[in-house]
Image 1: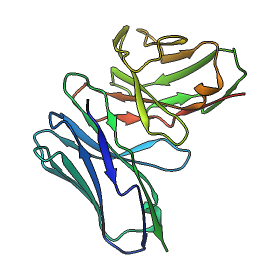
Image 2: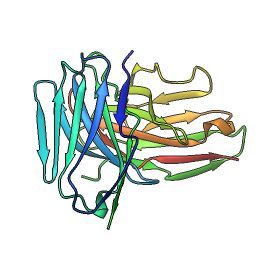
Image 3: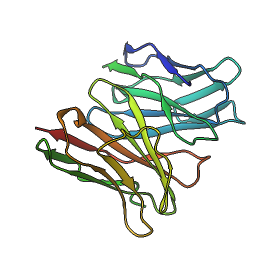
Length: 112
Length: 113
């Protein structure tokens, strides 16, 4: 059974810091890994999608890497801003099922 | 492209009533998924549908819950005889195919009183 864990559970940093969020999964037979952010009381916004043949994706100040063999992904946020404050979720899929298995989330607070 | 549209945004039902949640996928997306987020818990898969077919309902409670995605119109998640434990945020997502990324709607927040 696939389990997805995110560390840390919560993180508070001053504005401008670079930070790393971690995601680990127990079954390396994943197809895609996707990072989302969720603002309080809101839906999920897709940030980055890494397909199985890829090792990383970048969008603006965000960079996500994927190491399937070790069962890990990291989300790197450069020059953090207060607007980055949200819960960050990683989720994996397997080709056979198509359903997302979500991690436990990291609650990020960027202090101005 | 309006994205994934869910309505209503908020729904209040008394115990024993029925709740109907609607989801219109993004244009061109034929795969629809429903997830539930209980208070202080993570997102859990409920059901995966394609037009007129339920592909995977392994996350659906065995009783009172049903889902459909008809040939015409939105996908519907139906909860009969709601109980307080059904209070949660219900999210719909769609994708153009099973091997590409998902787009989520803003969710329906169900409160059972």
